Image (cartoon, rainbow, N blue to C red; front, top):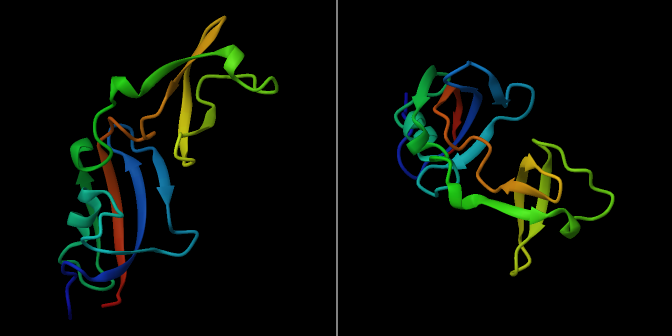
Length: 144
């Protein structure tokens, strides 16, 4: 039976959990498995490493340190925004998701980290930054 190697395209079912609490943050079990090609950089490095050398139908659990996942929380990605810069209909709350448009037209996902009388603080870090992760994996298919 073949094993996953660099440049293979694979289909994987997964359940992702925070290593510290066991809280599930995402799972593919109720939908199609994720499909990706190893070495293209579309998946966090620790996930790719975990899939390497797996055989079809194999299941395993991997631990991914934050450095091989979404990295540390970066303080420079927090920004203060005046409430007067928000659309009137938005009533900001901590944890609320917002979308900002970059100068090049692309969008950036933000979370409200703090709400004050005249301003809010938004966080542009990935929501899983700063966390070690645990993934339960099942290799569904090696496509190439």
